[in-house]
Image (cartoon, rainbow over all chains, first blue to last red):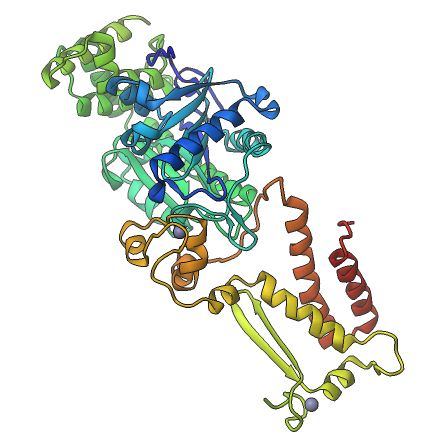
Amino acid sequence: MTYDALKKSLWMYASGPDDDVVVSSRIRLARNIAHIPFPEAASDEHMAQVLALVAQAQNNDAMQQFPTQWLSLSELDAVQLHLLIEKHVISPQLAQCSEHSAVMLSEDESLSVMVNEEDHLRMQVLLPGLQLHEAWRQAYALDEALESTLDFAFHDQLGYLTSCLTNVGTGIRASVMLHLPGLALKKRIHDVIESVTQIGLVVRGLYGEGTDAKGNLYQVSNQMTLGKREEDIIDHLQNVVRQIVDHEKLSRSQLIHDTPAALADRLWRSFGALAHAHIMTSKEATEKLSDLRFGIDIGLIDPPPKRPMNELLVMTQPGFLQMQFGDEMSPMHRDVYRAKLLREALADR
Amino acid sequence: MKCQQCQSRSAALHVTKTINGMRKEIHLCESCAMEMSGINVKENDFSLYKLLAGIIKDSISEDDFMEQADDMVATDTCSVCQTTYGQFVKSGKLGCASCYGHFGKRFMPSLKRIHTATEHVGKLPRRNRNEVQIKRRVTDLKALLMRLVAAEEYERATQVRDEIRMLERGGDLA
Ligand SMILES: [Zn+2]
Ligand SMILES: [Zn+2]
């Protein structure tokens, strides 16, 4: 098994609709194989049985439309696992039970199937920009293809059965990652989170907690999985995201109109730090990269660096730095290498 | 139990239906049921009363998850995966599909709190897609039949009854 963990995932380099605010869209489906205990109560033999059944399904006729590579997590080292998490290809939870888990991964890494996570299967489609419906179309087809040889646990009334009650029914988690620097600077982010939470959606900071999300990156997802059709769950999320995008754009134009000098000063100072600093902590990089992304998206920082922002975001994470610059690395060394990587990236415009 | 309509004879037709999580019960004696349906059994080839009784009975035993859970002895351990109710409460994770049958009655209120619903209406598995769609259609038709009978719309009720029969005899969705 050869896998280049430094390989970039589609969402890191490709552009997508509304990607000046919506970084990525994701659909995840939870499924379990009928008549085998869920991972929570499964024995080693059960886990092995699940791995064998899914590996078999990977090669069925219907799956030929989704060519994937099979990665056994037990054959990957800790740094490679870390990179897969930083690319959002696998969950930290899957990496924890690496002994009996695996992931099926498409060439561009937009499609992945985690095996033996909290449920037997967690299928994921991850696309750049606002593409929830396209992600659902692909996830639906993937589910159908796997189902042609797998029998999923299903109850007539409750739908697809999952280990946690929060996923039962459709097993769907639709989410978007949003970059909201305008709302944050205008101090409106708290109101947005509060109102979104009241209509059955969940908001969390990608880095850091709650309203104090580092880098102004927020994940918004559906909470309920039972009693609604998948399409309705996705439409609801999509409509709310559209409104958040409008509010974000309004805040941005207000900032540009009302306080142009203060805004340009802030964003160019961050550019300066990223382009010239020699020690850059993870926290500082996350914050400054948000400013840089903001500056690029409103056309202030032009020309932009050649390396896409999503790529820089992931490349400056600890696992990636370790992989690129050497195995043993103290946090101090990491900050030095992070600064070096950013200087080089920003010089290349 | 007394008939709801005449309040005198004992009820022979018992209908329990869960609609939007609310349990509705109807108890009628044979003559009130016939009177309400407007059909005399002896003169007609079919009996709406018998039909209703038969149809409603299987819809309860087959489709209502709450009813299934009701039938179970309150267990503390899932007999299939050995997960205990205490373990589930602590970890928030069920051990297998059978845990839903064993603990379903106890966690149903939380399930309803989380999702504000207790019925899956989304994607169906390929293997039993047709079967589940037919079951869903039959459940809907039975509810419709009840409403039609209550509204004394017998002509349409007869059509609906025929469609239910056709589906239950292995017919396909139109
Ligand atoms: Zn009566
Ligand atoms: Zn169980």
